[in-house]
Length: 445
Ligand code: ATP
Image (tube, rainbow, N blue to C red; front, top):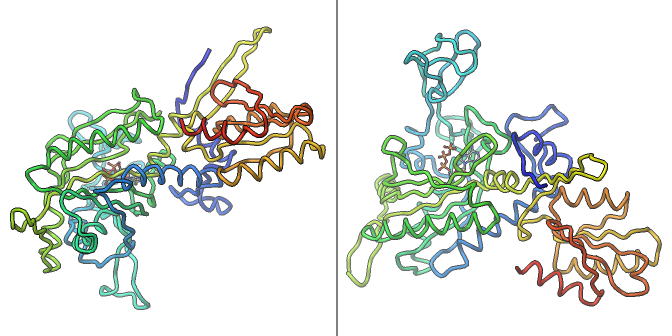
């Protein structure tokens, strides 16, 4: 019998801590609300996700990469609308003192009530800007005030002309970027789902305005395929279209890719037709022409932009939720035997192989260490020789290591080892000189 049950995040949060995926930030000081640190396994998983995204988005003729700075000229945020518009209406409950977003209030008898204590006694709403402020240089005055970017997209827009001229790209072409963004979210939560510091993977695709629909449909399909190719189950992914009321001020059309988290369907990625809004705004506020010259029609115009914007941390959470598997077997004595494993796509797994010698005796260690050295030239390899083999398998299962190699006493005579597969637990005896090709064939699938 097989079951995949992740009814809430608490099991995953503790697995992540125990196995070294994700820890609470500054934990020894009591933690910092909504900030998380990626441990030795988490950092590898995150790097693999970013690498998969980077490959999917930039290993193509029409998309180039960029790494813009986090601090930008304050006028950028005036032009983008973030200074005036990037805020949430906040209200306070006069009874329980809870502060919450107005759109999180519950409707009762046609009135907004506190979502915590259901009191009707709530204050008028106030606007709260989500951008973090800091100062550039030693003087802390109005003139030195800058912001931590709340999205990476603006770094792309302000470099549109630089990139186009230096690469001589013709429309349609895109600029992709991975980087940290910061939002002083009012209600962060659900582990790494909504945090105040997070990493985004965004791509802005510049197109001739009349072709916007075609490119929008193309990227919508590409992006959902990307999630499926990372192993996320089809039935846990869906599109959700923004209605006229939800559309952001810059958007002409928008779809979210949603994932079915244990706490419900939620956005993981946005695909937006931003029209020429951003380039027009930056052209106006900077006074610099940002038009594109089409040498076939000999016409100048501002391109439209199709944006794909996904949060790396949020995608990582979706991947972990999707991979978490509990397999329950009823033993002959009627008791339940539970195996927990992370069914990660092997391209994402932090370790590809774990080498588990059955004993610390020198004859076995020599074979195991040689394998480790050889395999480490190509893969992230874990070496573990302590504890019972059952416990070591269990640990690798929870980490999501696709292949475990056991070196046993027969290995000395038959120059072979046993490879155990994570998902099927199938075991295969492989000659030492064929281990590398066996692994690379398996991982290439
Ligand atoms: P939400 O409605 O959840 O606040 P958003 O619509 O404001 O998200 P975008 O501005 O479109 O999000 O950002 C693109 C992506 O960045 C989101 O789909 C999400 O994956 C990620 N993201 C946005 N805000 C956060 C956050 N506070 N923490 C983690 N990831 C985030």
